[in-house]
Amino acid sequence: MTRGRFSFILMTFADNILRFYATLKIKSTLPEGVEILDPYRNKETMALCHLFYHKYYGDEKERTVIIGINPGRNGAGLTGIPFTDPIKLETLCGIPNAFPKKAELSADFIYTMIQAYGGPAAFYKKFFFSAVSPLGFVKDGKNLNYYDIRELQDSLRDYIIASLKKQLTFGINTRIAFCLGEGENFKYISRLNDELKIFKEIIPLAHPRFIMQYKRKLVNEYVEKYLQALSR
Image 1: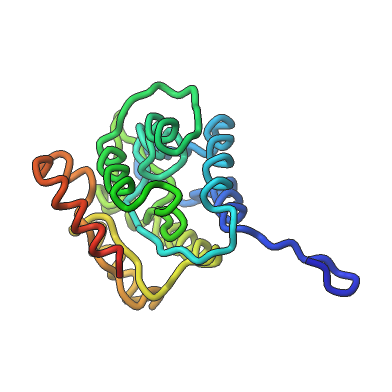
Image 2: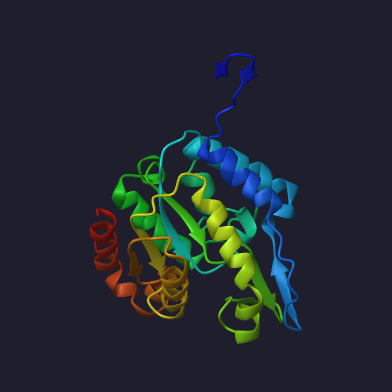
């Protein structure tokens, strides 16, 4: 776009996401033994993120955010894309990759739901997966949730608030948001929202891993619950 002598470059949703991921950094001191899981320092991961986000978010349309916990090693911690393991990225999103083709439980449920919604193109046109902490954590070689250690949760407060506010500038719908997890994650994001007044309403959804671990026989029912909620 050109106006007089000045040129204005419109940033797409994808441009904003990729710039955000490339500059993510936690400056606070973490509890002993806790390590940061940052997939965006990996060149191969970032190359895949560029392909994925330009494919599904290469526009200036508003999206409704679905807020998870933080990346795990076999999903977003590997591909850089929330709830997307290497298998789903290649077979359902059409983006070949050289990562080991190992399925991840949460991704299994999310892409079952996405397929029922109408497929990745239809889903990602309206929704954007994020997390309370866009970077993950590992302790003793295992995934760690930001709320598992109170000291960790407290040390991340400024980073969490700053990253959430930054994402709002992408074109996030603030009328309603969805939270993955009806327990600790929902409690935390609800308290934060009460303080910051960002979203008018936050709707909790059962976490995909909980569904796949404890309610697998009811997957179809949970998919329908998701679709009904997201239709709002």
